[in-house]
Image (tube, rainbow, N blue to C red; front, side, top):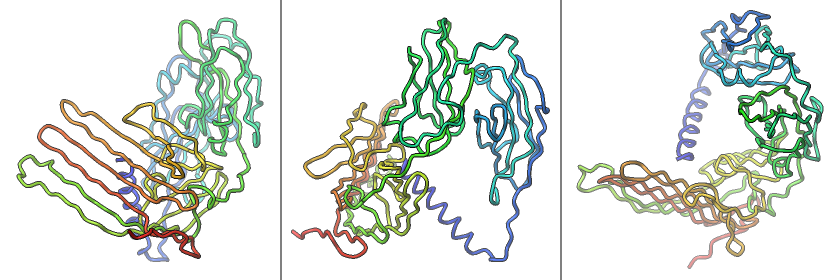
Length: 418
């Protein structure tokens, strides 16, 4: 289902792009202007009630980016960075209870942007919860530290009343960004694992530690930023299970079969069983600060999609899991859902299972499997979809079997005819 939605979104983007190509080359595009902040007024103090942020609208804007940082807008740790379609944002009671007293700056930028985000004037507000601040809790690393080769080690002061500590490391924005590490510890030190370090993108992160008391609740007293700037490893993808290069081409024999009995009033539900041929080709690639992006045309690979992301020495599979280019086996915790990595002799199997029971009677399930050979890539891939309910059912199956692989210069693999 995830891939089906992804294909629809990609198709829509292609249609929009083609439409855009038809416009007059001399036609100018109007972009929204900088917005004006309305509330809270610059310098407002908050004690018990969380702030509500308001700004002016622009008819050319499709959405707005709100950013709230500690102390200085451009250099402070980013607490919130959210994209909103409205011109109002109310900080929740839960979030307000977690931030400690101090000064914060905020600004808004409209989208779309021509080149860089056009930020509004920055306004400040302060939080004063009417009790004296505790001593600083964070010790190391220092704010703004950069890590390139070794994972960072985090150290903080002991709190005599705390039963445990919660450490959180988040990409971009502490309360709204992608969580990299969330862990509960008794000790006052934590070293990021090599696994987390390798998976994390080169980017800016915000981290903090909150004492956990017997009465519960978390208050984050201080926020610090750090940057990961890891060098990209030298890769020879042609020696892996994911060979990729410009003009690489895979041709497959496709077998499709299934039925659709979702209409209980149809006494003769449609069935199908036929063959076709598809080609997957690498048409472009980009190398950036986090690795490679390879763009495919013709069709997709079930495990990596139609844009292949290589982060360091890992590849993104099924839109959410980063695995090594020479992956270790991974078993699913849930027998009906999740990603699985297995081997059979020299063949790697990358699988994604999804199963949902539908009340009162029925289920919906998909299974996607890509079989890969080292230096060749996908030699077989399948997609199985089944759904059943009271008095109805549907099933569709797609199996692609490799006919040949062309590496841009030679056909290095061809299926032997029986």
